Image (cartoon, rainbow, N blue to C red; front, side, top):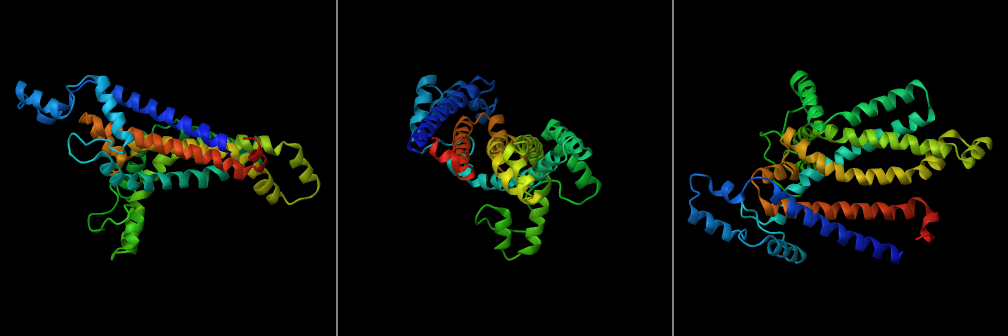
Length: 337
């Protein structure tokens, strides 16, 4: 176990170094000048431009800029936004609860539907239900988020009027921010249930749009993993001994099939962050995805660099927790690492 943790820690450091270097380099290769974005073309005389560039530290060489960024990050300072003049970490964690709330519901939607659909497809292999489930999941995986989000808005919001078009909650509710999670903040507010159900209605479409692709992947992985386990000798032996089918499927087979499924679920958290960029833009969801899009448009280097580093740290940590869960799911692995 100690060797396992050490390897994971070294991997984490290497990944974070690579992410910091790539994010630092790519944004500077993109066209556009943050100084010009900030002061505008009309106020961009040579003297003002030079002073502003010096104040932002952009007149230094790129190696020195990177060294300043990475050493500050190691001390917990991810820089200050060029536009808002606020700390990057402060702005990030002020918006992160909105993205986390959306991502958690998207993953809940994907898992609660994807795993049962995959099990059903495996049990009734090569049947109508199998073809229907896998065909639908293939369609769901193939749909771009921006297109799928617009279709959901047109059908459920504009056509049927069942859900709001955008935002986290209606303007009629004045909910104070306590935890940053709207569903929790509404429950502890004076408005309570009316505000809670309004926030829930705002959450449905973005969560479905973001969770459709993970749902399709989880369903297909569950089917594949279950088929492999169901054909094992010990499952056939259990069936021959007359053990109830529900116990064989949901205890013996599913538990042994869960390792690749859990791996996929962990990897999907990374796609949830990337999916948030498109989903939050389409639904005007005030999370880090929409914030990052604005930062890219404004060439706000500190926000992009710092946010990429935080997100990469979270994804690596989640993957580490997924690896640790293997020891709980499959006790045979506890002595193998």
